[in-house]
Length: 88
Image (cartoon, rainbow, N blue to C red; front, side):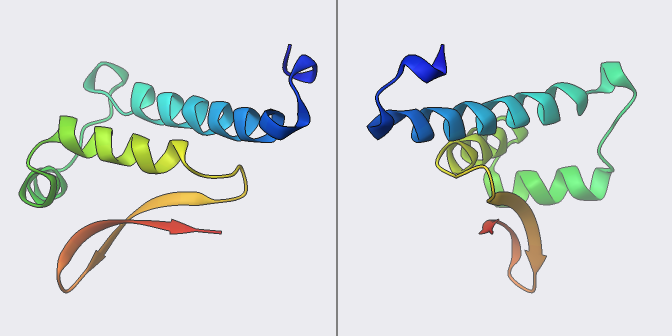
């Protein structure tokens, strides 16, 4: 029960768990078994910038777990390639 936690850790726990849930939901839904497949161009760009899809997911998850509920992690493309950014 999250309400039983001390105030000093309650909000951080809530935010991290919310981010973890959102991350799991996103990547669990983004699978070929669910009929969703990345285009070859996007997959190639992810692999070029992050070495592999698995590495991208790991980095994305680390960013997600460090945020508050009102913040978002996005995959962004600019002239230098793909990068992970944080937005409020």
